[in-house]
Image 1 (cartoon, rainbow, N blue to C red):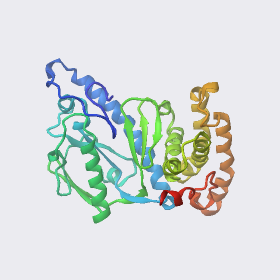
Image 2 (tube, rainbow, N blue to C red):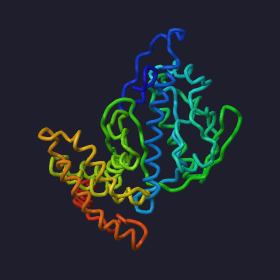
Image 3 (cartoon, helix red, strand yellow):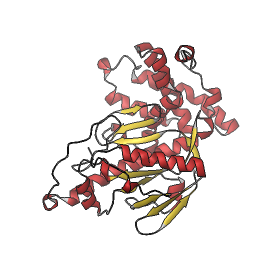
Image 4 (cartoon, rainbow, N blue to C red):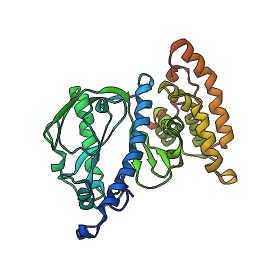
Length: 333
């Protein structure tokens, strides 16, 4: 979890039991602030890289949404909101978590980390009902509300606790959210989210190599793998085909984001040598060295497209491992 006070809880988790309020005199608030800052540093890195990829690939994605690159925080999602509130000196629960580098929110200069928020357009999210701790639903509602305002009105006014207000216009990005788990070493794609645990080894890599894992999970979402597997069964051969596709699309996504496509090979090599599992790896994946070869095989075509067109249009030029329409007829019955 996010240190002692925090728990970034995802959908499906149960709310914690109601406990007696802690004696704040017994809490090391400096340590709490440091734990929160560590989480926010990792979240900033994830949001920065994720934004760069979803913005750079927006013209090729099957679905886009308007976004300003703002990630909110709600202290009700913490395991001990009152401790986090004291550590951060908040009067309410909502504040800026991150503004992704290069996004409209960041470029406005008004969304500094931990700046308290009291209104999203006409609504104060602090007034929305909350179960009080480990409540992820209210934060999701806030993000959904921001998305709706951007889609309906082409912008959103956000008011801060200090009395200032910012109105920000969005740009189009590929439709995916990024979430950092407060514990765990996994990275997963859910179809509409990329979720990465704070202990995932790639957080220690340089940015463009770390971007490889984000691109891999995004590839699953962009190519509709979760839905395809739901229709066609998650048997080993099917999962392996989708994993191979996600690997091969990685360098395309990185190239359009302004990273070197070769960074995808470097990610697979760096991660695979230590974490692939050798004889004990999942049979749903190729070996890391094979995966690196499949990725590398895409790069000459990407480089050729960049030289001629200035972009790597994977919606047109990427070769699929699966038939994306398979199972649609049965699913529609």
